[in-house]
Length: 263
Image (cartoon, helix red, strand yellow):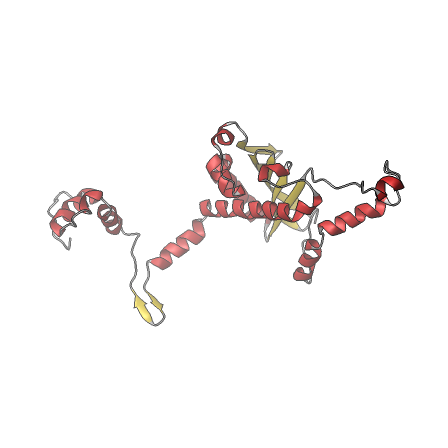
């Protein structure tokens, strides 16, 4: 794939190779070329301790998820965009980047969402200060994939320095942001999983050999009863059945507020 690997016989070994790009290896590559290329520091300067250090001006961390069928991925991604236009709001940005927002940051426009369409391909963009999180549907010869990218343009936004030794900390921040935004989106796009879990909850079950009764939350009467039970007026000194029935009848739209207890 472009900027990714679609298939591998040993994914664990591949992951180990990818994570093997450490600050020490990057620094060794720099030293190798500095030994061959001319630069302002003389031998005397080097012996005095003057040397180049690598600064991280921009770091990008991406997560690519390949779809079995491109059509499913496109439909899912467009639905995700519609349901998550508010990702750039301060309360959502706090969840994605695990950063507590100050009032000035939350109101000065440095947190925002943009939806950009190039041709027929839409993309979702979330901004926090100088950090840019982007999601888009990616087409490639192997099929289609959803790409989530977090680009950190100023490490100080997260209280991290720019020296190369801070790369592991930036990796953790970037990949964590990718995971969190997917978790936030999962909560809003929980149609099938949520319906399945809700249906399972309403059926009797066996737990450690003990029978557990069903919780029929989907029934109108049960929802009305739960609404009445949390009314503050019924809490201080408890309540009786005759106090509960008129309120229940009102929520259910029954004409007789004195309906029988079993009605």
